Length: 427
Image (cartoon, rainbow, N blue to C red; front, side, top):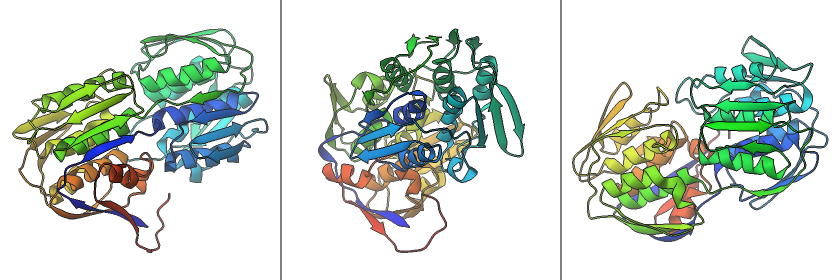
């Protein structure tokens, strides 16, 4: 078991590169199952969710090779159709294998996915999409069985909500289905476009990705390719939150500023000065941040739910009262009690969080409850006076690559400590 120990109260300054996007790498790795040859994914972050994904690929029969941020997948022997519960439990994103396995092998059996407990996140939209493509589905005893004995066929599908995961699963499965699929009310996140770019480089025919309507013309087969995933916009915004709340000045390299649009607006609202170039962003914080009247999480291109928690942590030291409304997940404020332990003044009413800014936070021992909530504790801990110890950091390491090293490059005093204690927690 490991912990982060932070000596807070110091301004961040300096520059660093940002990791590849977790939410791009995961569906792309699942999609490699459809390729006839090897695929090499570049800029692949070294995080626990990628490790779990690699385990699943290998269990299904793939051969994988990791060299730094390059991950090569050879699916030539991937005849597995079932992912065991032990692997599914490690991350919610494992449901992204649904469409890939079904399309490759004609059947798939999964257990209910695991991951962060931030809400129900039902997979009904995923299953409905597979049904529309011609799959037969049985659900019983916590397992899902899908089969397509006559193969998948193109269809007209309209999502009731622009779910990122459902959009990805449908695009992956439809890319090798017979005929054309038109997907309406699709998610528009940059990671959707990145997945389509990967599949198109393999020989798929996908247009409109990143827009509301995606058209997928099914092809008979896909080839292997080499693809570099985009930069992680959520990780970038998290480090910007840390710089802002500490009154710092940083530069982040290897990013796509356009992907940070709604987040940049929030930083500017707090009084931060932002300057962007083609592949970097600079932030200079004021002496004290201003509060933000109202923030509402929304599907892209709105304010992303995944950065909600770090932004709340940033606003705990803003001058005045800020209000944030979470519209995507119903249980994403579990970390709030831990911020209160650091001296934050917050209250939650249903999906609304009210943040009354304080002048000082103080160090304390806190516990991570989920990935983004854990990132919020790092942000607050960096701003707090004294020592903050964060436990159960496996949640954080699911999505952030070596944050202690990245923040160390930005002059933070943060260490990862192995406590040597035995634990039953999963990695």
